[in-house]
Image (cartoon, rainbow, N blue to C red; front, side, top):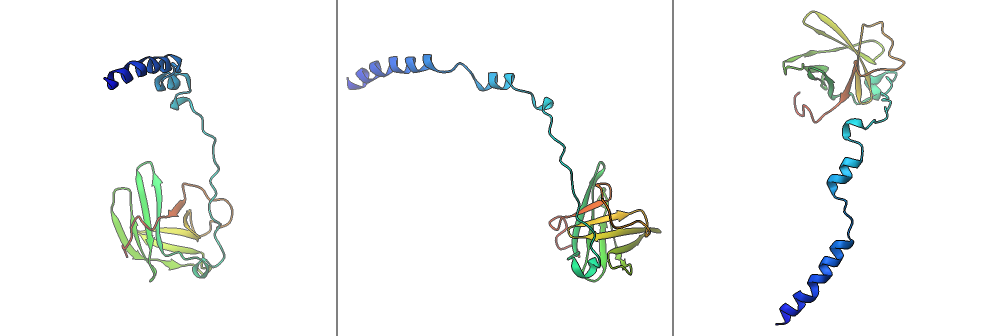
Length: 156
């Protein structure tokens, strides 16, 4: 009997609260706001680490560096004993040794008859056009491989 009495008292209160509530739903709120396709995000400039003098002794260069391309992800792992492992976008790996230039901030990798020059920075490798390309000045995404040790942990 008390249950029925409580229900009779509670029912009108529930209807009163529902009538006073806001008629907005999550769907109408989404319809009123901008769609995700129309949102413009500000461009954030990317800064890359500078290539130091004598990176060989001032930078912990050993590890894996990755570069994302439209075709996939490239990786280069530099080892303790001047060895490297390169993985292209298709997953094909090549291994070898690299040589240091006399400035100790650039390395030379010869692969498939091609000479590749990389400048070493703290947390980045930069592919240079050739050994005469300066290591100072701004670097860009097309030449940057950023450190990513989790990508190939234990490869070398």
